[in-house]
Length: 357
Length: 131
Image (cartoon, rainbow over all chains, first blue to last red; front, side, top):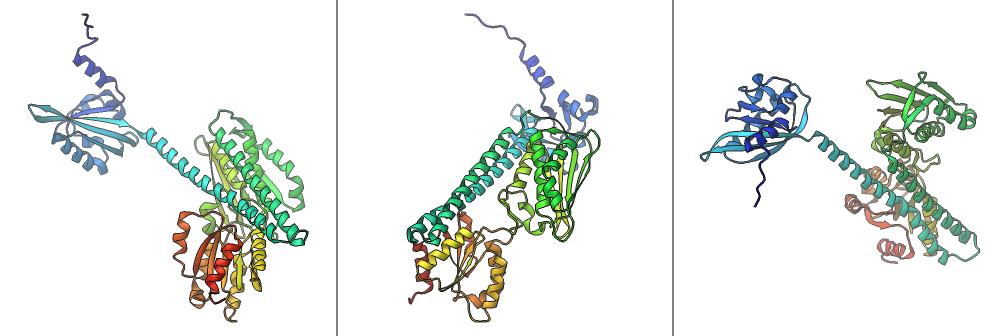
């Protein structure tokens, strides 16, 4: 029988773990004095060992969580393994989410000290929150889609029933037939919408991004909307710094600008000449801002508020529209990692602000 | 049957009007695609003693939804109680809809679209028990 020689003795193995793990490890006594701290902790708080060891842990914790840490330490000193999550800074570091475990060390049936291991779960938490938000989003999406599939379907079913009641070749019969056809087309349109939306969502985060010159895209949109813009006597004024480029997908950017501009034209105020101002600025840090402001009808946000970007929501029933444009715009912006916000005043106009990373 | 129909969708309106016609109930039916206009109409009818016996109300309408309409109607609930029965029409039922509807004393039922002869007969039997 052959026995393998140990790679290192137990002490050396645990020492290596203590020295090299990215988790913070502290050894504390009952008075919460730090008796030992690993390099991960020293690096995070940015202090040499002699300024940490023999200091109370309180010195490295913000006031609002000191009580919690003391309470958990006391619990561990009763002999229990204690685990909790906390959002806190350590020393001068930025606040992070920590998964903290306190493990008692026993000698002769007595707890003589407590090891604390803290793992940074900030990113994991962020991902969980993103998934949570995305799930909620999808749930809402399915609900909206099912409602909007059922609406034309119910009409079609109603028309089929009605056709059995109406006398053939009368105007009402023909009207019911025409409505049946319309309903089926509407049903088909909803399915096409879903397809478009899913295709965009599918590409979220894909690396098909390029540096797109904004001025060029805006010019293309202006040309394709030139006639309608001219017919309504509207003006598009753009302020785009030379060389302003957006990192993203050219087709999406075109769709965003096109949607916002065509909305501005569609929902203009007949009593005032339409002015649309598109302004691009390099924002704080790396971010960019594109603002599209119009002098149109405006949206009553106190009433519509959270629904503006939702699928199949409409705010100007006297104008034709399916309630898809702003949902698609938002989806496009988000697929480029940005976000879009709206402010509006009825009778004054509407302003959309797009922030891109 | 004195009926007020509020739905922004012309196809639904057409269906309801024709079904009422085939049931012989279309003598006094008024249809509105705008809830605001329907409310103005209703407020003119109340003092004239011409309260509709049935209001068929679509839930999913832009700007002023069926729920908004019910809220606007709150002030006039007393005048309408026991004379006017509101039926909510929706193309897809959220479980919360029935619970929410229960908070409005005027609401007699929530119906899944499409309306058909059977549903209209049920409404008639409830509203015109003597007939």
